Image (cartoon, rainbow, N blue to C red; front, side, top):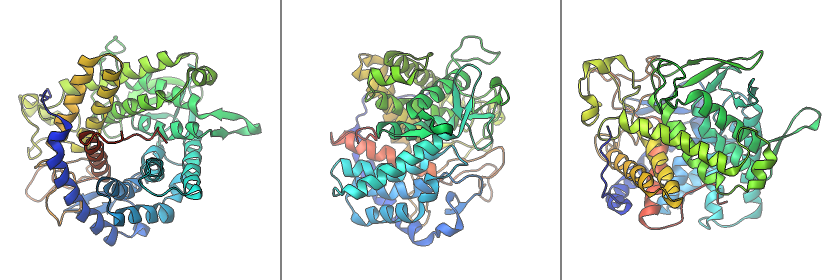
Length: 464
């Protein structure tokens, strides 16, 4: 169980943040100089060097987003130039990518971050540059919303790259792409010029994920524990009927792949910030019978996020870094593993620091929302949990301090069932490596915390 420090404040982490940004600068420059985008997308490191893994193109925006965030944190113009150049030269194919559920990763991390910086006055205002970013985000939101499977209960979902039968928990994090498209007044144009509301599809997908991928302890099946998250739900595409839980990267459909839970926690928490900008009339006009009012939508998002948040606290070691799956079989050989800090060097099961980085941001955003809306006890609990996880990740053995290692956050895992992750010589499990989404979410977490510590502008994509 996570042992959160109840006295930790964002300002206490400033020395660790300074060290992190100093280390990150060299790593970003080195990867930019070495990596040829024609070779694919950097995904994870092997012996400290980023390599590609042809499964789906979902991490390139993280690479360039890291450079943009480094500029955000330090004001160093060379990183803004890296991020701007790469966004223009490389990211267009991701805007129009019909085959993935990952638009909220790639395109918000690049076009979204640059638009946010312009809106904050951090980069010079330019009307046509602004419209370039807005157009990319509008089109990306519509393309993402077009990847749609209707369900028998009147909902629907953005289906994963597995096909129209597959609802991934990951994709709730991509809903921010639909949110931005809607905020900019865009719709998806369908057959016979049908106008499809991006907000409606946002709401439908969010409710489908909560209903089928998140458990609430209500006896749904024999393994219905409140807050447990399944990676994937399977539907009959002929009639839209739900069939069963499944998983691609977890151990089983009846355990929790911890990064899948992380996407749920962070996704719903951040999208609560979007809902704060939505008028009740917009919700009513969207016409989702299951969630007819803004209050009902917010209540459902909080219910889902807090269930996942509480499960993670109870099923994670004391320092806030989880093992890759709560049902991983080797954990049975590690008695008391929840009562001590995680051990990335054990002989049985890998930890996943990237899940911790994603969750930490989710806890901070969720806690802030709850505190601002009257639930200060829960809000404080979640904020302190997020800060405590961040402190763990910003220090060794998770912080990558070796200048020759291209990663920022060590001891992440990509696909344990497929055996893709690098196992160092002399060890029995994967450890010591980084992944692009882990680096990016640690970077985003660090910028978020630096702004809190300095009482600067709040880091959000929904104020643009």
